[in-house]
Length: 371
Image 1: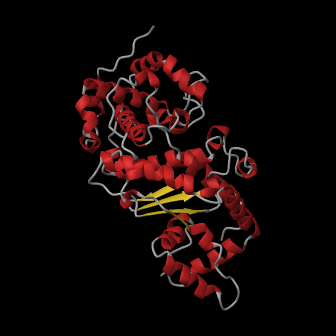
Image 2: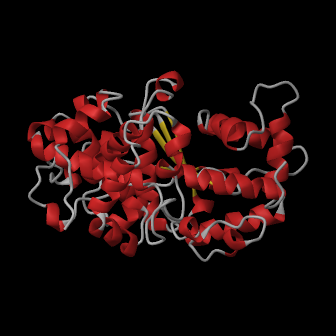
Image 3: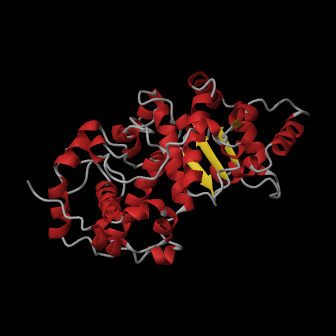
């Protein structure tokens, strides 16, 4: 039963924050001549199907009456009000068990959770930070309107909800139907709890715990859920580094299309200095992977340090950002679309293909030159 930030919660916080971070780029002004999907339509004219309304599940959760005799009926009423969200919250987010499990352990865990003074303090902090979510709703509505123009046969989430979970995943998705946003992961880079010894989130992650990151992170999580890197874990095990790069580049391009006005730093998660370093050192970065013969290596243990979050990229200068593969993949996709401009208008086909990193690379003719 959660009571306060423990070492176990701290470990979950660090892992989940890293897992859910949005890593994306927007095309810079120097790339404006590249053909991009048309996302210029006025989003104010969206149909109701594109309108995003966020359910404040955390508010409903903390209005549960915990007094004797009223608690169980109050929880049952909450479940009836949120028949999809509550089971997800109890079983997967908090791991309290299912609402139909023998013993109904979730009832004991929930009561301890919402009665705990530390948790209630955290809840109050989120309400002060996020008294309303109208701006976030507008951002997500615009993003999903762009998404539907690109993929008219795909639907948007049927339910988008906010919650707190004492530092669980920042964003979560369930297929294409649900999108959850954990408000306690966006309380600002200077939120004291993030710096607690038991939590100790690295600065390169905590600086992204700001509200402007919510929409990019939510869209990345959603797009990765819709377009996974491989159909199965077995297929994923055979991927080469170039496949990871190209996949990450595809996601970046989609983010660029659905969030055309979002600053680069919010989408990529890099500082402005790190982004500038990548641009200046592009040829050297590429030469590094060529010289190390890593591009077509299918041994994940040989290249995992290049495709996952880190403060910097191992074996590169300290000015480098982590997860450098994503930035390289973005450049490859830009080059590919420059060589194949019609592909920008058929993104379904681009995203449908798996394990085609080598083909995309060849057709992109990507080869940055040393100056």
